[in-house]
Image 1 (cartoon, rainbow, N blue to C red):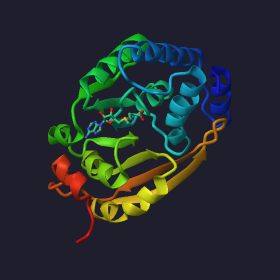
Image 2: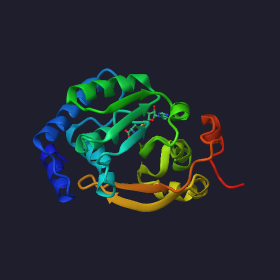
Image 3: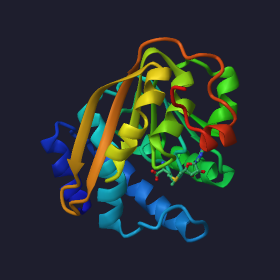
Image 4: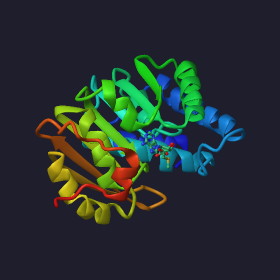
Length: 237
Ligand code: SAM
């Protein structure tokens, strides 16, 4: 998907990019290429692939959920997916981009500065430690390719306000993870309200995005320490 096709495919979905936004995606791509020469940010670096498998893929969740003006946390943002494409499309999004690898956050700092993005908080930290001062603070939490769904939920749910949304972007194995995470979602009061099954327009690989709403406050015992979460993901005893 080249940049022109990217603009057209988004338009078909009701997302209309202006000249500034088109340039911001181009500049983001150039920075990704530049930084990827000195550190390992992504194995996908050919322009048409980045536009489809990173940029377009990150934006599929916006076909279902309106991010305008929301306070959002992206856990494990890495090279900025899905957070930076969403921030470009929704300039008024109040974004917190988090990753445990500080070097990746230096890249995000450079992107934010060069693209002129406002209202972005960059957090080089782990989800299970940053939570201490940020419980129930966000309208929406996203995560793409960070951990299995039953693990991610325990990291994400405590950050959400009651009524807030958790959005997980998953690949072809998403459905299996969804079933595996059913008990965890009940314990964390996360109710699934939408599931998108998407085929990338040209490359044709499949994606599963899951949308949950939080219906009650999260028990303060969550999240547990990361090794506990990993060793024994939440399920009803
Ligand atoms: N979301 C990006 C994407 O879709 O390209 C990056 C995916 S990368 C495979 C997973 C990222 O999650 C890594 O950069 C890793 O450092 C980060 N990560 C994993 N566990 C984390 C945690 N508990 N808190 C914060 N970041 C975490």
